[in-house]
Image (cartoon, rainbow, N blue to C red; front, side, top):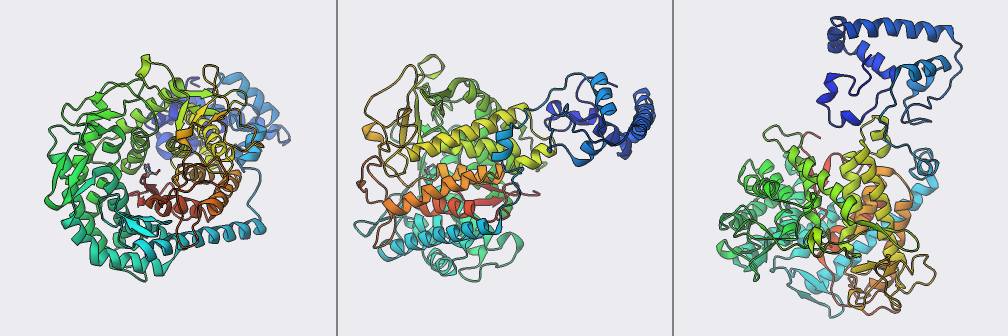
Length: 630
Ligand code: DMJ
């Protein structure tokens, strides 16, 4: 028997095969019972050898008594291998296997602790727990209703609510961004009244706004407004030619408006001399222009494709996808630092500008969309998008190698920045925005299925395990960025105590936190904008690991939002300083609080079969699109 992996040439065509180890028993049974393999095997000497070997093996099994010894040599031992494997492995079998197999290239095992905390051996949550989470989910729904009612009362049709001054504000070009960003959350929560109010407003006003309004940012309008319309189209039954929503307009209304908007947004691509679009669009005359510094943000130009691809799929018009995907095809050709890219790109030269590398602002969702667009397109035969996966894997290797460090004294894992590129020095600074990364890493590792299933099916590579580990470590750091403050809410930016960096007297204010000396919060970074990234990652990690601690962390964060950001007259507000009590309030409810933060909390506390991660991909603003053929 060949001692080198892969065992079968077929495995070569199977992703990750080179890291998979198949047990002796599986090699025999799969070889024998897979019909075309059988054909190959009887005609080759290896096959004959395997056949004889199987007969010999079976004879041995019959001769030995059936004392069941767990297969300690198998990678996924003690409960994680399949039942058949454990049943048939006897002492003799184990000895044979030891003799005949080279030391396998095994994925790491779960430690006792991990097994426990991953929920694999904890069984299903009991009824009492389920009731508790249902009640907590209802609390989130009430929070959403409170947020919406404030917006409706004081700001309906404006982009955002200023909850303290009880008025609306157009900070995103005047397309009623909160209405569109909130709609699919209301659909998911089954809030028919809100669906009706938001849907009717969109039907009566949005086209007119689009044709009369001026300057909008291409990225913000795509992720919030276009994304919101597209997921509303799907969730209301548009893909199935049905109207599933009991209320609000027909799904085709959302699609028509989405097309009208996207046709105008396309001018950012078509007026640029390179595949890199301009950052701003004048909707009313479908023209586009670069930002004042003439540059586009790397994350902005690479965070349009999920939306444009899905619009092409449902409208039947390939032009949106064609333009959007040119950005990635172009990025593929540009030089990078171990897969990491600078945060600015010029639409005029098509080149990256400057050296600054980070996974926070202007860099973040470039990495998120590499893997999500690959997940969205991987079943489609009309193009080869494997390069996206390769770029993602290379980038995550770069993150692990160049950006990950641990704090002093408690070894929290964080992702820092390279302000001067690969040759510059490392900065132990992390935007809250980076907290999207644990979710993205976990999703990229299991492709949306549970860790338990992925392990059972031997689908995880060594790198997948490394990424999952980083995801879990980083999620903890993100959670501790909340716990360390007096309000239980994270600052916009945190610094970390390392051997090269420390500043005294800049803790978060919660003296009972273990991490007061690990996390440093500078004066200008103490605000909280009700951002979603941490709860987004908790949601994804809960779905993938099934570890209840992620739900508990999410619940703690939700309670802090309730306590310190809720405004009695309606809505929730951003804070100026999370480290002091009572916190100074800022007077702004961002659209993503309804579009993302509350949606992810609601899904985190709810049934895992709702919007499953192997069948949907969430855009960066938490609008879910179905994955074709998933
Ligand atoms: C949202 O608009 C999106 O999540 C984006 O990717 C990052 N910024 C906000 C939320 O913080």
